[in-house]
Length: 262
Image (cartoon, rainbow, N blue to C red):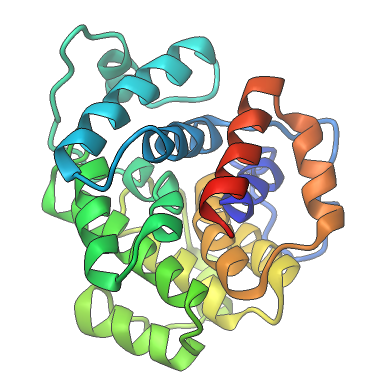
């Protein structure tokens, strides 16, 4: 989970001013946490307050997305999701946006199997992003994170993703020159997974994701969530990232780490 938060913070300053290079300072005064982190914390809190019953998880996902979203309203939410956050009884709105995938990484840490991971991913995602591509994008990230956490090799993870979700027959170097801003799952999730697969360590994964351009904070958050599960996250990067987070979000991070990341 902290890998996704770091990716979001590092990528935040490049969302509208892309950096098509791996050579940049990771943390600066221009960095901040965005909706990617806020909703990742909401999913984590929902998981902490729920059993593994999908219906209960769905209800709590709505509850804590609205709670945290309304507490931190200036994080860059999309317009339709912003309206969803303010509704008394919000309904899914057939979205295939990458908001489904940016927030899903905590699910991997509470799942006992790949199948359960997919089930819990669906429970979290369908409350808003219930378009088939939105559901697919979130599940692809969740199961890739689960696989990375449970010792699958990169070749095995790529084979699984290609069999179930997306063909990854491209390289980041090939894609980078012409890749543009795309907030759809189908236009950003495969690219984020590929950045992880091509990386040499956690930091390199974040740098690769940001260097692609496009929706930089979200791509880096997705990549970072998978890379953090696979490589682990260096303590010095964690220490820098938590400085950007308010106390209540750090408390969720600490509780999730104690409870779900043993």
